[in-house]
Length: 67
Image (cartoon, rainbow, N blue to C red; front, side, top):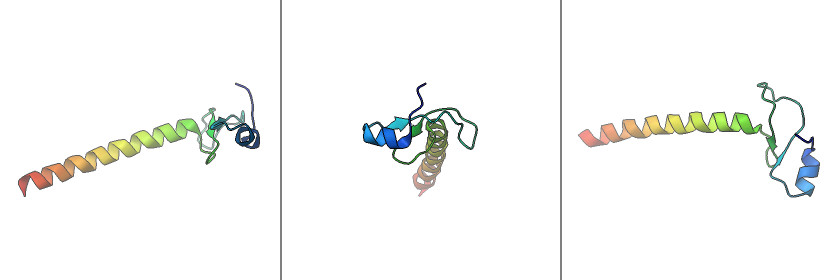
């Protein structure tokens, strides 16, 4: 991957950039220009969030079905 700074990415209108350095969790992937978050970390957190929301919705459906 080509190393590009966040500043260059903003200037060129790119949504992601690559520093060549791993994130604090050890992922060597691109980062989002908007917030600097590692793309891989973001995907992991999104999946965990969707799983948690799914569990909460299931519990709510069970509670409301008996009410």
